[in-house]
Image: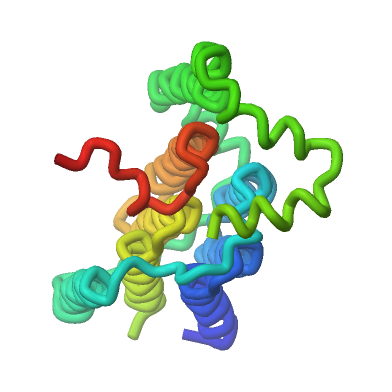
Length: 193
Length: 103
């Protein structure tokens, strides 16, 4: 275990703790990105270069921007109320997480894990060959899944025309506010809190 | 402690942090972030076991991690679209205020 492991592990875990505990959603997202960056570094330390770059592209590039849009579209950055569920469920949630951590760490420390160090530095060519031979069926399934998820996400996020026709007051406020975000944003915030 | 144990312990801690966030936070977007953290912890396990496993030349762990990242991206897209749809209808993203089915 060398210095790189310590730094990257600390960056990953500290980013994750901040992402789960800060109040402001935008700060949460920034910490989450730091955590994902540390994780990509850990992949590099484990000589999985391709996965590290995929992680940076998909998580830091795509998923983060998706979360930014979700936060801004739901005005989540403005609501600063108590971010937690009640005290009872907070205790139960933290207790469950500690229990899971204890179980996993116990298995790792006392379990029969014997690493074999067969040095491997896979090239992208080797990964591509595996992907096109043994893993071609999962690859096609993944293509179908991504297409389905894309269409599903668009349909889910599309404005509901029936609801807009029957209950116009539900759809009106965001449309009226769309052009002038600064002043109406304030009373919208007050209404939500 | 070998690097494999370190990676597995980091992954266990990451999973527990994500689980704690998903269970205790009220905002649906933060709950989704916690789920992403748990999926990432599983990916770290795949990579660690691939690197220190018996046959790294077969690249199974790497490919499984890449597929898991793809599935996580699809899950994030659908999950965030659901959050936006719920916010449009109910004007809230707090998970405990979405209780229309409570008996």
